[in-house]
Length: 160
Image (cartoon, rainbow, N blue to C red; front, side, top):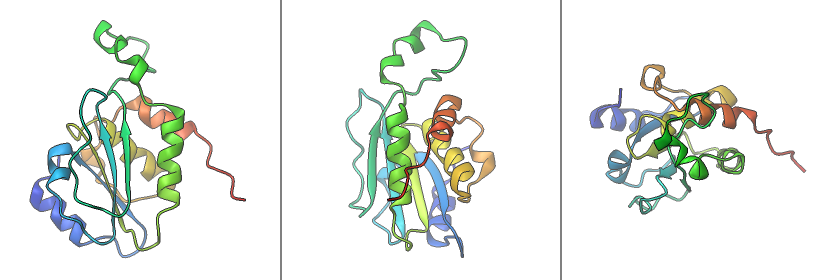
């Protein structure tokens, strides 16, 4: 269930004392956010949509991929048409590199997709599992399982 605007702002203005939090939301909610200190954004749009009109955050990663559960054994004909635009291992690496390179003063990562239910929630689930970032578990029940699996399967970059 998506967070209300009041809940979103409450969490953005009260980040965790230690560690980071990830907040998944819709494109519409993300486009209403003002630039806030300590907040980075992962912006996920559908391939057929233009980039989201976001405030000028210092740290933004923009991705475009279809919302398709590409690892499912049963793929509808509608979903099959989206397979060419599915989430990739390269995009998973981009997400990991982005979050691993964020400065320590970033306490919140906002992840948005079109509806705030599937792709953004999948990234939030993966960031929670990979890095222990705080999430609101009950918000994440519709996370795209293929995106989560792909995120978890990509090895972290080796530090030089």
